[in-house]
Length: 606
Image (cartoon, rainbow, N blue to C red; front, side, top):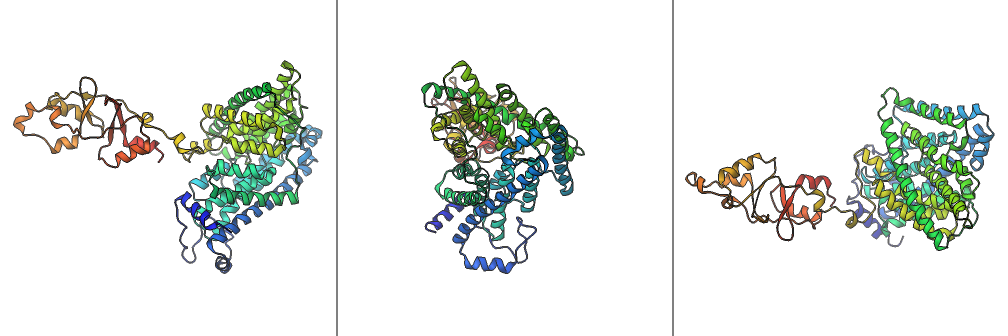
């Protein structure tokens, strides 16, 4: 592997953690508490392969396992759907529509009962869509994921989706792929840097094999999971996605996920409409993220004894909605396909997105495992189709509504993930329609900007924020870095240089802990700082106390800071002073406020 040494060193530098030392004999690695391979076999593999080659072999292995896992899980999905709905993945809605009402109701209830039963048996809920947990594993847990739990959760997730859970099948594929990367890195005792990359490789490979989107999945891994487009990270992600996609294409099919008519939006009027759609869908994306989070927060408050039974309650409500129509069952592939072909009526295009958001939020918050990626495509495709159908009636003679449905898919994907690049390429690979790339790019970028303005956290990072887990944002540090103004505190008390000593002492003692007293002139310009510790060590002769003023005891050598400094520069200033606060002045040295070291450490990113 030419250049593999440079890539490996880049991985270690990216994580700022050296490879882990060899564990003591008999130690159990935290990644694999069961199914540990024979020590002699591991020693043979470690001896035959050097550290660099071993890493690249594992990259290929993760892609292979993810691809085979996707094939197996999708086979389980098809078998289960055929068994309970007399349909397969391509015609699920057709089988559900032909099913009697009792089947539409009881099959989802059975899915909820399965999730509840497994949760009770393992003693912990299976909730969550998995992507947030993978991001947390990469950034906070050094790439550690429990492999047995991930396999169980993936299997239950794919069964629940097959039985009608309104979630995405990609959740199972993404979770098992990521867990395989974590397990392999733990098996061969790789350091945390390589473990993190392998987890991202497995998750990206799972998406690639689920939707036949190797380019979009690779960029999703870089943009969403790793937060970086570094070339050293690009290589392993691409290799894993290529291997996984090759396996899925060989064993399943090699065609775009959605086969649609050829659409082309090249007229300036259509580009303006794409921009307008981006604005509207950006707001809808923020609503989607907020709806998922609010529902999860509400369901988190249910009594502890009721929590394990919430999947059954949620799926019972899903079954009740299916009595009126099965459009909300499953991941919604057929409904999206109908919107892309313009065969859904406007009434359904307007009602189904909100209904899908409601049942998806309910199931995800209740603890039914599954992905939120595919439901967001449903949400965007139908909103885009409704927009296109309205445009057709107001401005006849344009492109069909299905073209706007495709734009809506890309816009919602970008708006909910805040990842415009991977969203555009995923939709392009899913449909294979290059002539829509310009309006698709425009709608996706605008939707991401609008959604980020209304809802700062993405669909994945919002889950981590609720758990008080912070990960770096996937934007350059010089764009997200906060300045001094964001932490500026007003000055409640200041004194002139002629203030008598006894007044200075009283005012200083009344200051909150860590606060100092600032001396300013009549124009508000900073002259010096009076600290309590310095005052205690430099008290003048008692006979001269009545003649002592603030100017005699102030420190005029304190270096103030200005509002244009970055927080990293302020951190450097604090490294050269014992003060807990630094004064903030403008260009004319007029005192504006102060900045606390404690606030800096809480909010700063260095």
